Length: 470
Ligand SMILES: [Cu+2]
Image 1 (cartoon, rainbow, N blue to C red):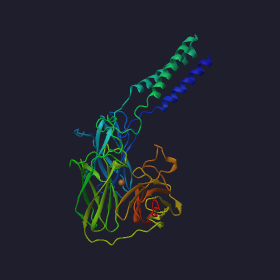
Image 2 (cartoon, helix red, strand yellow):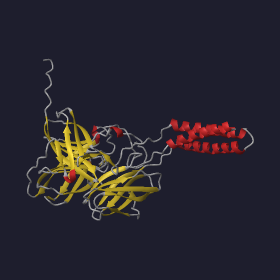
Image 3 (cartoon, rainbow, N blue to C red):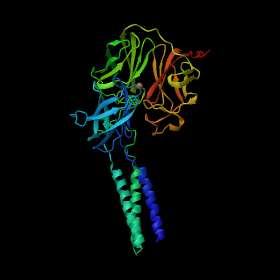
Image 4 (cartoon, rainbow, N blue to C red):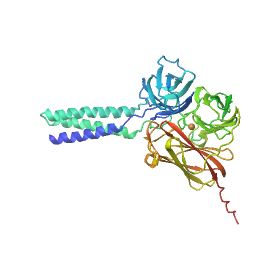
């Protein structure tokens, strides 16, 4: 009888371990199983809006907002509404702390499909699209959970019968039934993988798309129209319109890539650099506030990705335009080259680079320290340990992401912006396309502040290739 109980316990433990390993894959934001992080420059604030993964609907929707250092505190009015639905009344106030930090609210979602999160700062309303995925529970999953539940119940009954019963056969029969149930459930779990995490989902249905678009399939080019009345020294809005290059209609199928709908880089004539994330106000309409430090012509680059463009090279578009600002033109300031330099607040950075030759990959690194000690509390910004923006002599713009440290390579559990564990050394690999003088901006986040370090480097021309046949 003891032996029977022990055998049943082993079967029970194995079943429980298998059940614990089978977590449901549910999420939103266009990709299953992940939180959606969206950087948005709303009015005077630099925000990161984190829409947490949701469970089955109807249910709660957790929204966390990171207010970056330098952004004022105050209250945002937040609500979620299904696309095309009359907004429900549950608008929630979110108190943002001065000086940077994290705050959150819990909203409610009641249907699967495309949603919009509205954040109102009293002056304008950013509308962030996100997706509530279907709770796709395939038949195999019902079989699996039913099987494990039945196995548990049968095992308990068998243990009870073994402990208190007088006959030998009931625990054996019950235990046999439990074993059968475990085998059925495990087979169901192994035979089907269900909807794997990372699957892109259709924003309308909340399910995997019926037809898949091949990687790298081109989407029509986006035309960028910028409208602003910029004056040096004054903060004013830049209104951006994104127009489909084929149809002329507003582009409203942007997907969040690298944690923003649009990454905007503005380069001013005095050497000013700004990396901003315009807030979406409506279909194809975005706005960002900007204070030019100099009068003159500013170059504006927007990096964006359209839905269905795939993950190939054709997926991300870099579109550009120019804007002029009224006021006196500042003399160009030239940033320092490689080496050590001190930043405000006792922080220092050492910028290093391997051989800089056009057409060959270079390793560029920024190593951070404070009062002589290595900095180990850098935060993720835009989902990366660091960013590097490059501009070449022919105005080619590069946007490079830090190499992840070895410990998190391939891990889905990389820390997000709220975790300060990065540093001290942030490395990038970049192949400069052209020789000549390049300007670089290294960007990292610490204490909810984005720190930017401009650097100028000279890139050598590649050695001429030996003539064929000579
Ligand atoms: Cu960006």
